[in-house]
Figure 1 (cartoon, rainbow, N blue to C red):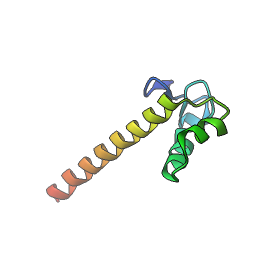
Figure 2 (spheres, helix red, strand yellow):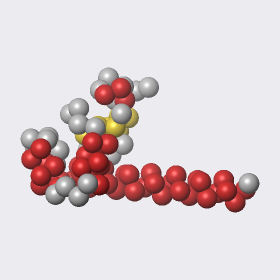
Figure 3 (cartoon, rainbow, N blue to C red):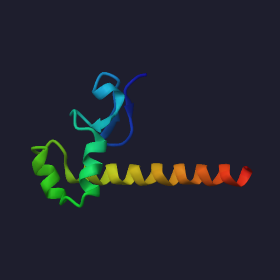
Figure 4 (cartoon, one colour):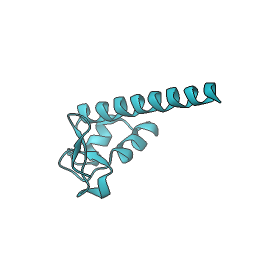
Length: 84
């Protein structure tokens, strides 16, 4: 697997965190940021906690990509249930 750009701020690089999606040029996993968002943590606090290595647009992109992945997975699951 080669480094894959998933967005402006998010990449998946097999050399970093075993290829899990991370914020560009960091070891901050997107899943960690999404968990913080899901818990209702204020985005400014998330940025502060990661010492500014994660920016507001990066958080927004993570949320957007997660939503798109959810929609695609949900759409795929509904197609499978209709064909069963």
